[in-house]
Length: 157
Ligand SMILES: [Zn+2]
Ligand SMILES: [Zn+2]
Image 1 (cartoon, protein in one colour):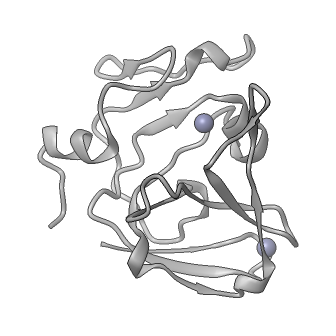
Image 2 (tube, protein in one colour):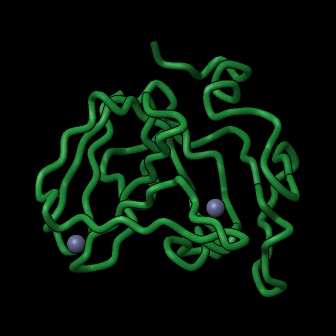
């Protein structure tokens, strides 16, 4: 499906095609939480990088977090005017781009189950609103975004 997104101030808009549009991943890592986490977590989607179209790209800034003294290859794109988190691009997976669900204006499908990840980085005050079928991980989950969609038969081809 086509995902259309924008920052809060409207300086930047983008669209990207995605076969994996269910926002099921809730990441509680310190980077997501501090830079994008409205609920103490952030949700990343998966789109096809070569379909990404950006309007207002001159307003984009990129943040690369430092983890254990090393710069993360993950490029977190955000609007330099209003600070909205937009998407993550990681050159290790150049065919993918990971928009934040928070930046998407298209109506996203509601995930039947969710994954709570990086819980070891979660502060105490953040409560995990876990439903029965949800899965929780201290670090990264054992499935990719594509594998989760395939297991549940939710892939849009
Ligand atoms: Zn903006
Ligand atoms: Zn994270």
